[in-house]
Length: 167
Image (cartoon, rainbow, N blue to C red):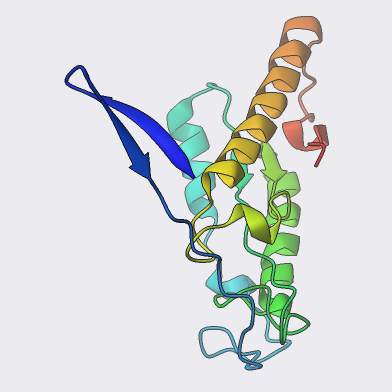
């Protein structure tokens, strides 16, 4: 992959080597000491989101669940990646969806819009192509929101959760 950068009127060619994320993970399904099926709801503190909404004082906010690396290798039936066993991440997403609806957050879940090829050296870092795809999804979302707010009155019980992003 190559980028051209300008530095004090000098053009330099920078070559970046992107290493593929690991795709094979251990079969340990525990998460932060919790075993499969544990109730993680007490460990998730989303009250800060309500606090941010208070600080924003009417300024539209959108809470975005960013994409994660989804393994297709060994033990991918146990873990999405090196950080998250499937049961724990699925539970987190269910709680986020529930809390965002109950507290009326403008929430969009983009957890799976980037394929494994869109990640670079770790399960946390997107490659330039992955970043472009995420940016395009966010632009699509913000355009839908802007169009909706410009052309329709939002009812008191309506949130942006209804806006879906095409993969």
